[in-house]
Amino acid sequence: MSPPPPFLFTCEHASNRIPELYQAIFQGREVLLASHRGYDIGALELARRLAAEFGAPLIYSDISRLVVELNRSIGHPKLFSEVTARLSPEERQGLLDRCYRPHHRGVARVVSGLLAQGGGNGRGDQLLHVAAHSFTPALDGVPRNADVGLLYDPARPSERAFCAVWRDRLADVAPGLAVRRNSPYRGASDGLTRILRAHHPDPAYIGVELEANQRFYEHHEAWKHLGDVLAKSLRQAVAAFFSE
Image 1 (cartoon, rainbow, N blue to C red):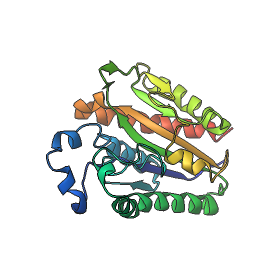
Image 2: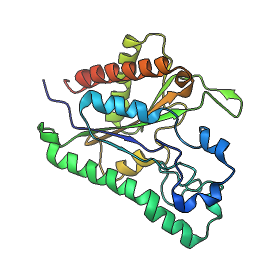
Image 3: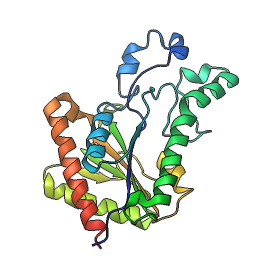
């Protein structure tokens, strides 16, 4: 049986913290910051659970996505929120240097390093990256029909195949869970995994965005159970996929 590749877990929207330099422009926006627009509620907890399961590195940002959207590329029209878009061009460049580039450079450095060294397991040609996110149960009044989403690029065979295996293992572990692929978002859309794909071909880099419905977060035990389900199913998926 071939050993699994090294793992990397990330969480781009782990917190709604506003750096001191930008706190003045966010005054009076506490409700917005506490909402799903401010951060991915519960995502960091899931990312920590998964990273602990595999003893893998976890990189996360504790800066609100309303300061800058880390899951977008530079130049994307939604890189800045309606609050920070009002800053001057020079101020926005400074914001990118302080809050955006450190996370992207850190992730890119770890990805390249793990691919080069193989995590000590002899599979230096491959890496599995799972980016943990969560989503609001309803958007603009429209309910989402997924409990868990697995986002990937359909044009990359390894990502497509791995997510199919993970979906099947989730069905085994939690039969009642509504698991959707490329829902509620498209995995090939602009974001961190897409940026990394441009530098690392398939199958060397397998990038998956995990999306969890925040409705489970309303009850601590339900969110904890979801984390356990995700960890168990991911371990089974890894064992099945990389033994082939």
